[in-house]
Every structure is written in C-alpha cells, then in structure tokens.
Image (cartoon, rainbow, N blue to C red; front, side, top):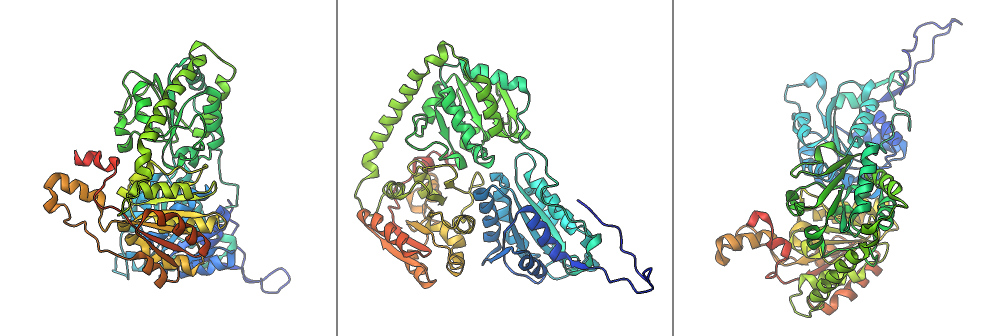
Amino acid sequence: MTAAATPKHGEAASGLRATEPETISGGHLVAKALRAEGIDVIFTLCGGHIIDIYDGCIDEGIKVVDVRHEQVAAHAADGYARVTGRPGCAVVTAGPGTTDAVTGVANALRAESPMLLIGGQGALNQHRMGSLQDLPHVEMMRPITKFASSVLTTERVADMVSMGFREALAGAPGPSYLEIGRDVLDASVPLERAVIPQAGHYRASTKSTGDPADIERLADILVHAERPCVLLGSQVWTCRGTDAAIDFVRTLNIPAFMNGAARGTLPPDDPHHFHLTRRHAFSNADVIVIVGTPFDFRMGYGKRLTEEATVVQMDMGYGTVGKNRDITLGLVGDVGAILSAVTQAASGRTDNGARGRDTWLQMLRAEERGLVEARLPRLIQDSAPIHPLRLAHEINEFLTPETLFIGDGGDVVTFAGGVVQPKGPGLWMDPGPLGTLGVGVPFAMAAKIARPDREVVCLFGDGAFSLTGWDFETMVRFNLPFIGVVGNNSYMNQIRYGQIQKYGEERGDVGNKLGDVKYDLFAKMLGGYGEEVREPHEIAPALQRARESGKPALINVWIDQNVFAPGTMNQTMYK
C-alpha cells in the first residue's frame, strides 16, 4: 500500500511550468480498490449520491447489475460470495437505500458470508444539517457488521475499501459497511496522493490449524473411538475445505452428516454419507465432531448431543466454540486445514476400536435404509393437491450432478431439506440461520452471473417469492435463465401451523393467508417462461420444458395446504 509524495508545483528546472498532476475522483478510487480485490460485479440500485462509483466501474471493467430493491442487491452480494469464495459487493444510496439493504446485511452476518456494502451519504459540509436522505448509517450498521465506518477524505477512499474487505475476511467472515459522502466521492485528488492498495500485497495467510498438541489429541481420540460421527457445517464450504473433509471421513472411516452449505460434500451414494439418522447417531456415538456450525437453534443449542459422548468442536471463530454447551476439545482456525492436519496425524494408526468401526457404520446404514423405505410411499403419492414431499422428490430426481439448488421458503423448503440431495459440493444454498425469506431470486441472480454455465433450480414458497419476486424482471433483463418452482399453498404455512396449534382452526389463518396467485402468468408477463401444475405426474415434464426454454422460468405448483413438515411441527417456538 503506497502513498506518493505531494507533487511539486510552479516552475520546473527548465523554466517551463510543471505538468499538472493526474487526478482521480473518489468514485473511481472505489472502483480501483474493488478491481484490486477481484470484484468483477456490483449489485446496486441507483441514487444521486453514488453515481460516480458507476463511472469508475465502467472504466475498470466491473459489471453493474441494477436491481429493483436494495435488499436484493445485498442478498445478491451475499450469494455471490457463497458461490465464488470471494467477497461480494453491493452499492446503495443513502437513507432508504441503505435501510432497505439492512436485511441482506444481517442475513450475511448470521450466515458468515463476506461482503462489502457501500452506502451513500450527504456532503460533509452538510453534516447534521438535514441533507437529503441523511441518517446515522454507521451507527445503524455497526451491530450487524464486522466493520462499519465513514470515509472522511477522498485520498483514503481506496484504502478504506480494502480495510472493509480485510475485516470481512478476518476469522469467521461476514459483512462490512462503508458510508461515503457525496462530496468525498465526487471530489478529485492527485493520483499520487491517493492511497491505493496493491492487489495481492495486503493479505495474510489464514490457514491456521491452532495448537499442534490439540491436533495430536484429536487424532488420538478418533483413532480409539468405536462409534464416532462428524457433522460437516457451512464453514467447510466457506474454507473450500471439501477435499480435506472427504479425506478425513474416508481415512478415519467416520459416518458423516452435512448441513447448510456443506451439503453435497459427499455425494448421496457415498458409503460415508448419512442423512436421516443424525438423531440416532448423536444419541449413540461415543465421539461427536462438530465442524463449522454453531450450537444454535438448529442444533438444539447443543442439547441434541448425548452427554456421555466426547464432543469436539472446530470453528473459524473463537466466540462460537463452547458456546451454549460444554465441549471436550475446541480447535479454532481454518476448518479445512484442521481436518487435513488431523487426518495426517491419524494416518496409519489402528487399534481395535478403529477396526471395529465397520459394525457402527453398518448399523447406521441399516437404520438409514429403514427410514428411507418407510418414507418412500409419501414421496411418490399421487394425491392432488400435490403433497410437498412429492414435489421435493420430483425436484431431487430432476437435479443433475452440476445443478445448484436454492431453497427459499418456510414449510415447503423444510419438506425439501429432508429429500433434496445436491450431487456435489457447493450445490446447495439457503438463507442460513437468520431464516430470511426472499433470498431465492437474488441468490439465483448471483449464481448465474458468477457461473453462467451452471444450471440453477430454486424452490420458493409462495410467500417467500412475493418478497423479492419483482427482480425476476432483472433476471429477464440480464438474460439469466434459471428454473424457479413455486410451491403454492396460498398461505405462510409454517406460521399458520403454529397459530392453529395455539388458537385453533378458526383463528389459524389470521395474518398468514395469501391470495391464489398464478405465478406462471407473472413470469410470462415479465418475459420469462411460466407453467402451472396441478397433478403430480405433470411436475417432471414441466421442469424439463422450463429447462429447455432457456429463459428465467417459474413453475407454479399447487400443493396441499393442510400438511406440515415435521420440522415445522417440532419448532421450539411452538412448544
């Protein structure tokens, strides 16, 4: 990172006047810093405060994708980070532009997704005078970001952008926010005075494995375990530690469960891949290794793990380890690097426990097979309205080894979570632990921009699609084909179940009943492909026609509103 000396002005040695120094604006400095970071696209909704950033992006070859709501821009930046492994970027204007993006930023925080949100602000010489769209953005953003700051001088613009990215990537990743005033962006300074980070020269290695003694201790625990299991969480994908996780599982002969973005780490037919028997494994294991997922509500705050087991937790963030539940051993660092180190430490070591582990895997496999067979009749039932399990089954059968699946909804996606199995790593996206609805269209947008050759299938609840569905038009405008499936039951059904349980059928639809919207016609109106499905046997042909259309598509599937996913019925908020 360099800052050149201030250029000399006045007469040169020859008696001729010195050449005027080359200047650069704040908006162009933003673009240069983004390009140095490897950003090739920004997601944005225009505003007068931020337009010089667009001008800079054009010069730097950065694609500008303009959306219809700032929440979509923030979700898309989050989604871009998840797909590429590089931070995403959204640019919004001041005031309501920034407040509209808050939900997307908060979702990225809970999902540990690195992104930078840049927001506009009034000029510094109008501070606290009531300028257009003036709000205390930094104070509002600080609780939901890893880093939030104003940029006070044009010379420091690029430096502060790089600082925001560094903070977003430190430890467990997350979002950063920068507020840049209109005058700071529009002003020009001599290029020699601008602090511009040099690409690749301001990063440190992050592949830490923690204390080597703890690596050896964990290797010893696993070698001697009789009934170990491992849960691979989203950080396995965040760290791009898929290969390390596979090697760990296979070398140590350990049954593996996956959640969040780690789904697909092992293919569904892998002998170490288990899905429906997690509760059984957690209740009977003698060693449980939790990798890159917190003891939050999805884990029953750690209470779903047997007290008798040795519990080991690996995580990128120190504050997560041992939170909500005591553990035997905690390791903080890059979870992929830790898994590799443990595998190496345990390699070649055997004892009676390790040799007898096949019995444990066979017992789990028999249990898994029984659960799959018991559920099969519901997956293929021909009832109409269509059972959500049948819809999930048809989608699962439709996926290719390269299809990215996105879940955006409540009850219908809860059904799908137990059925849809991505065929490889990085092929599953969902909101994450904040439970935000409306991520589907922006995630699909980001995925198709980042990986244009990859097929994207998104399952929406009808309530979820309604939140950000107008940006289906953005997908059409930018020619980003994807296959959207709306599980339409005309309700916010996950909430409806809880209301029925608390207040009875007569008050079960208060505040959660939606209209019978024909989303297939909505898609056609905006220039996409649309089709309506009412019978189970129509699902597969409709999906195939959507694939062949080459357009953004919505298949409107009418599903049974009077069935509820087990996960919905077991939610702690309804107990």
